[in-house]
Image 1 (cartoon, rainbow, N blue to C red):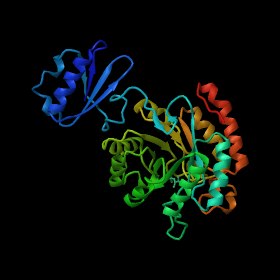
Image 2 (spheres, rainbow, N blue to C red):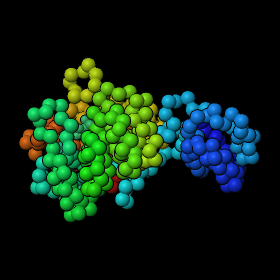
Image 3 (cartoon, rainbow, N blue to C red):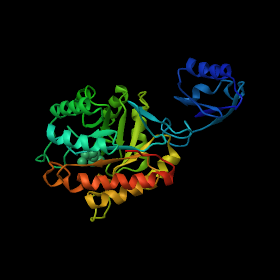
Image 4 (cartoon, rainbow, N blue to C red):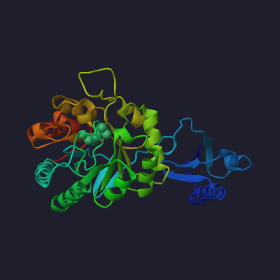
Length: 339
Ligand code: PEP
Ligand code: MN
């Protein structure tokens, strides 16, 4: 349930409501909007049965939440959230770009890619050290060694680092080296991992599950936020359908749906969303046009030799084209992206 305070409610009146709820051991989330304050309540609402909540000074009305999720929803927090990492804001007016190789392969590969991407205005270097591969015989990533290489490149370039965690153990390790953790499609419903990411308070990119609907995806974000971590960035990466021309079907309608339903920022991953490098730039353009707050793109100095996801990785030349085109589209949407 949310308590909508009157536009002219005083701070004392807000505090009184908050105190009543806290005394009843209910979860309280105060969201101060530009016009009025909204107080979200989590817990057993039967506790409120004999309270004067509805007639307390400053209270306008009580609104039940119909959706199965609360913290991620717009009812709970009508204003868009901005996730700040270092000096970069995700969900603000400027578009963010997360890019890099699917897997960290070597110091040379990573450094060469990072220097190129930084030059293109990319704020986040993304590379996987723990790779959840479909086949157990495929390259599984360098593990902690890969994280160390990422941290080294951060020191050299000043770029922010994003890397995937696949277990509580890899999360514990990644926290020491990265700025943002990624929970991949395969782990979107690993609830134990989600809760640990929540407790870690690390900014997190939460990808949509392979066959998850939007409600399941938002509930996964709710698991993280339920532990007090509000730094959640959603990432649409396509879902499995009967189509075989593409690896996944990039569901761009989720972008405006998320914008209507949730206050969380959302980025689009056209690399996994299509599985084919030649489709990445058109779908990146479409993602931004649909209202995404940024992109996650796989880039490799030589995609033909990539140890993972070479088919969908852009080479430097193609990525440059993508950036140029996004730069042209951004102002039409009243967004900024500067190199
Ligand atoms: C990845 O980002 O390399 C990855 C494995 O993505 P997803 O979880 O979307 O498949
Ligand atoms: Mn990949």
